[in-house]
Length: 106
Image 1 (spheres, helix red, strand yellow):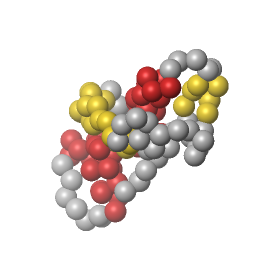
Image 2 (tube, rainbow, N blue to C red; image 1 turned 45 degrees about the vertical axis):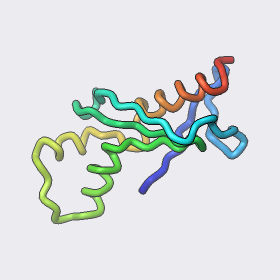
Image 3 (spheres, one colour; image 1 turned 60 degrees about the vertical axis):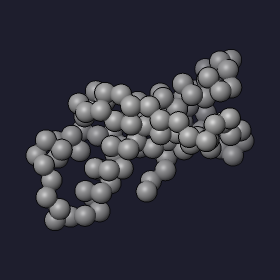
Image 4 (cartoon, rainbow, N blue to C red; image 1 turned 30 degrees about the vertical axis):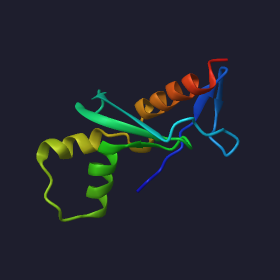
C-alpha cells in the first residue's frame, strides 16, 4: 500500500511533513465525500502520524496497475484515468483541515 505525506500550509507557508510534526490526539479518522474528479464517493483516512490515504485510490487505481489482465468495468476504468492519486488536492485539503483543528490556526 502506498502512504503519502502531502505538503500542507501553516501560517501561509507551504510545509513538508516531517518527524517534527507532533502526532494527533487520535489514532485514525476518516471522512467520506463525493469526489469531483472521479464522480464517486471516496473515503480518506488520516492516521495520527498524518499519513493520508484515499481508499478509492488504493482499491481501484493501485490494484488495477498491479494486476494487468484483470477485467475492469468500463465506468471504473474511466474514473481510474481521472483519479489524481497521491497528488489529489482533496486528500491534502482534508489533512490540512485536521491539522488546523489539532494545532490551531496560526
